[in-house]
Image 1 (cartoon, rainbow, N blue to C red):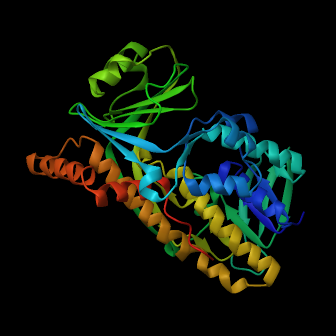
Image 2: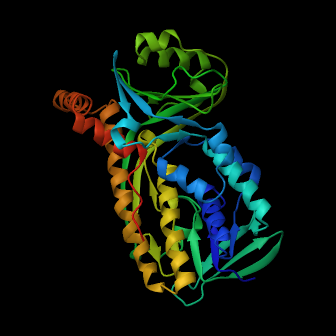
Image 3: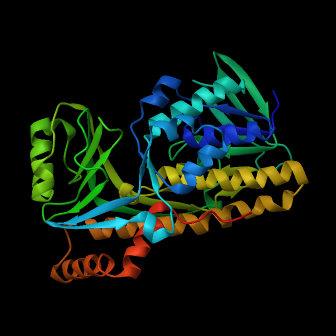
Amino acid sequence: MKTGVAIIGAGPSGLLLGQLLHNAGIPNVIIERQTPEYVLSRIRAGVLEQGMADLMREAGVAERMDREGQVHEGVELAFGDRRVRIDLKALTGGDTVMVYGQTEVTRDLMEARKASGASTFYAVQDAQLHGLKDDKPWVTFTLNGESVRLDCDHIAGCDGFHGVSRKSIPAESLNEFERVYPFGWLGMLSDTPPVAEELIYANHERGFALCSMRSATRSRYYVQVGLEEKVEDWSDERFWDELKRRLPEDVAARLVTGPSLEKSIAPLRSFVVEPMQYGHLFLVGDAAHIVPPTGAKGLNLAASDVSTLYRILLKVYREGRSDLLERYSPICLRRVWKAERFSWWMTSLLHRFPDNDDFARRIQQSEQDYFTSTPAGLTTIAENYVGLPYEAV
């Protein structure tokens, strides 16, 4: 079997890259170790930057997003009972964010892929990458008990942190950077109307809380918890009570509670690997970087990687510009590190750190005051939240 680009992973980044390449007439094959049902069962982020929403439109898969997604022109920060609205649209010259669940993004991309007739293989086993620095790399895997070899020009590793792509690069060829945070997020999904029209990020002496949503009737809430906490120890009643304690009184008073559809605890960490390329293998999204969810950057960073790789490959196939391939990692990493900085900063601004002394707490309070009371501070938050521009190729 032969193709132009072998895409490892059928999550949103792999599917989005595949759709863009297919529309441009560049042949590609996607392989995924999980079933479609499993991929769709993942509960993930739901805030799309302006750049990702525009990329979905460019790929021709935005019809349902534009019909059902919620455009948010602002976001709110709460410090105790003090509330500050960040006017994203006004502060950025018109940019906004789109609230549209990652599950729905994946579903739309899956349906577009199926309609296109492009090849996607699910439930593959034993995927291995070969000849990454040769002129023609190849991928081997097992499908329905049979061994398959896929020859290609390039490989896009869109298979996440635990996937085979990054592990196929010799350890001595990579530099890893990591920070692990001393807490996690306990998240609950419920069929209850959101407590507010826009997201609320709350800093409280008991810990961080986030009020988010998936639709006008489905909400997603989070509270900061210690790493020792277990989901089974958190009844719905306990979760709702704790959330109310951390929200401004008027917000807590109008919170509609109900049974949970899903609860989970996610640890927070920052991770970056450099470079994001090894020969003809290009790491995309979580295969190369992880961010704490505070800045809503995980899925969006994957989308900016996709955009960069797509535009490079477009010029490689149409103009023979193979010299551009080596620019992939430097371009991506410039944006990755800016997003890592913002996610780290938002996490530092809004969470309670167990080891912080009085000095550190005063510094945090000063950060909160400066960035929410000056035009420069508010603009910095807004520009980063809606997403920094994609760098031209």
